[in-house]
Length: 121
Image (cartoon, rainbow, N blue to C red; front, side):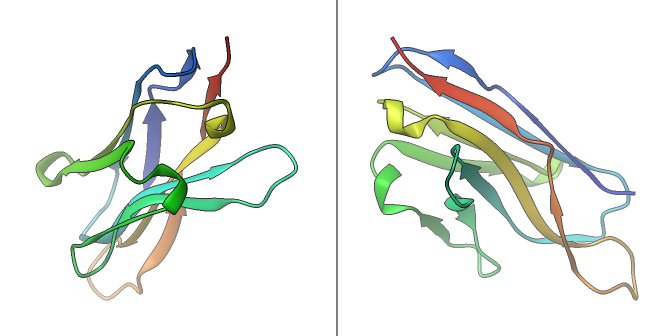
């Protein structure tokens, strides 16, 4: 069974910083892509930042220059460093991974439970 466990959310003032972590655990043969999405109240879930299958990174235009995604392959963990946070960054942040659990299994998409980020004074 595969689990994605996020941590690092919380309340921060505008202009502040937070670092999110997401660790994938369980039966994992190979991780093909991994990243972060967010969903604000009344809005659709959107991509924030992710490592693609080719190893490159994608960022939402709204976070470019402020957020940085990084990873530790040995730990199956991705991080999201969020700087210069704005009230509009307030959302539940979800970790996402496309991975193959075991040899012979088809790749599947997994989601974490989400972590709340609130940017407010």
